[in-house]
Image (cartoon, rainbow, N blue to C red; front, side, top):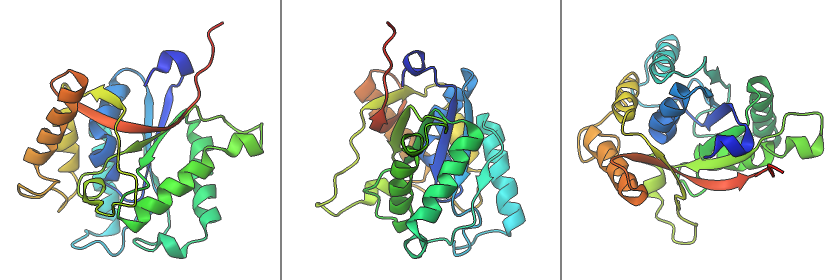
Amino acid sequence: MNFENTDARNLLIVGAHPDDEVLGFGAAGASLARAGTTVTSCFLSGDVEVRANRPEIKVLHEQSRAAQQLLGFEEPIFGPFPNIKFNTVPHVDLVRFIEDAIESTRADVVVTHHPGDPNNDHLHVARACSAAIRLYQRDPAKHRVQALYFMEVPSSTDWALDSSVLPFRPDTFFDVSDTLELQIEALACYSGVMRDSPHPRSRETLEALARVRGSQAGCAYAEAVQTAFRMVQSSA
């Protein structure tokens, strides 16, 4: 992601649920935050009311804020939508909520779920983001998004078994050799999210995935995203 070409300084991670931001873009986001980018997480289902073994909402939000603080992110945005029921929500409501988040954060870059994820909420968030970033085309007075990227969320993106759905194809890599450990610490802020190996949300698997992405990019550890849309402005 070349911020020199886009002058992007504000990045918005749009996730269905708290912890998606850490799993999908925690290490890369922390690296960008260290470099001066303002990173904000937006959760459409801020309360994840049907999550197994979920703590009280107040505790969950405290855990999320602790994770954001560790990563160097801003105060998160908690949405009101029902967990694992985004298919029951009018598409326009999801789109407008994301549009408001883009406007309030002045996001130049949006990172969200891959549309091939088997998690129903993730799918609807990806579709809504694809519509929300076009707001400036409907209203030129609105803030213009320069790029949209899809992230991979371990225990979701990697479980997409439907061969008719396009798989996650990483094409943009971030060296996270200095922030991988921070990502794992931030994920541990969420009670019950980390699992024992060989689960995808185990320390061992997260490190292994980062090493694989690093080998593809030529560094020790990397986190990858897939480009959905990117506006490159001429320097002339």
